[in-house]
Length: 534
Image 1 (cartoon, one colour):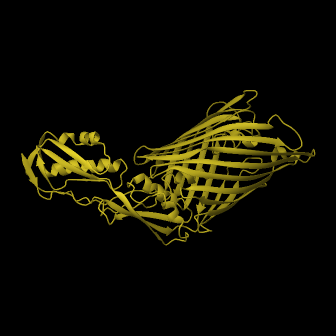
Image 2 (cartoon, helix red, strand yellow):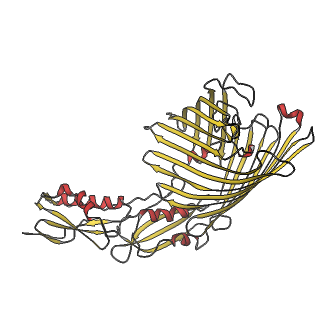
Image 3 (tube, helix red, strand yellow):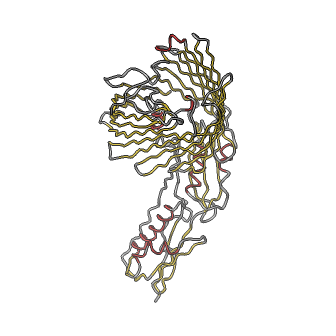
């Protein structure tokens, strides 16, 4: 039995010709700034305009099965199972359309950006319907540059795409995200119909981003003996060399003779998103309080070379290999007694860092391995010599409805031996167990975790928080002494993305563990952080 279908076409273009695929950018301590970026800066998002494919008609006929045809390899059994419910019964044209649309949606969900399933003009024999599948291939890449980025830089990043390759969403997002990761530029991508059937051109529009960014901040996250109140700035100049590079400069001082300065430069290398950077920081301090009688001063210089290479860089997932080298020159003096201690360290590190964005969730993570050596210039110490340590950091945000979010953070360090104080893991403070002073309970190995529930109030930009912090540290690898700290608290956050941020925290300890770094505070501890972006 034969039934003729005249021009029954699901008019989705074989190449998604009319589907404009736009990929725009989305838009503390300074850890809060990172939390504000949890959605991802300048992240490619693939959207599509679909043609109305409704086919009217009530005529029914018996459908035995579908036959899938394609110039590319497709999973016949998977597609057959997808539309099995339509087979072995009478269907009308609209039901056929629904089945074919289901196949199209599945293929695009598998990462084929403009994949299309359609019904070609055909004669139906023995209830078998042919469904033709075109996955879509790249015709050309076109770059329209209205930014300050030098000609050829974006083309270099887009060079990983080859003419004739299958158009996969992850490949397109990777190219756009690699370009968007360049400083001073924003990239938007559109797929347009190619000259040949089943092909598309990938058009990348480059637009200028902020030429510079400035942050002014103040907090009370400092140490009692070097100045509890701190004031600082950070300036970043984007794209000074017109290659997507950046230069940054910062400074901070406390209310009690601590000064910290830093500068650095970062640039892209190659076509796959690799970045290399160099930085230098200088810190000097004079300790007060108990240390006044000792006339204790110190200085630290740090020179770093670092890099990162993305392994995955899509809208939903980012994974990068990170690596670097640090050289530190440290000097501590007790001038009252004429004691002058100089030491230096060299360390290599390598690991991974990334994030995963899901429906209503965000997870950031890193794992770094350090191998270093500490040397004393004029003396010796049990911390001298080679050392190894492994650090992990995980933060997870889960939406619990329209106004509630759960934030969970975990940090850890595992050390091979007794470490110098500059390499130790610290439990207490604004970025740890907030019920305890900055610097309380430092040691060689340890972990610290936080669970925080945030409520978005009806007042715009105002969030309330309740949290629990806890952790444990091994004070000395040699002696195996441990300390555990825990606390709870309430927080208030007033923030507007890319504009300002204010955070207040009130925390009290849980348990009987006393302070050792300074006198006990029976009324709890109050922390604040405020910054303004320009």
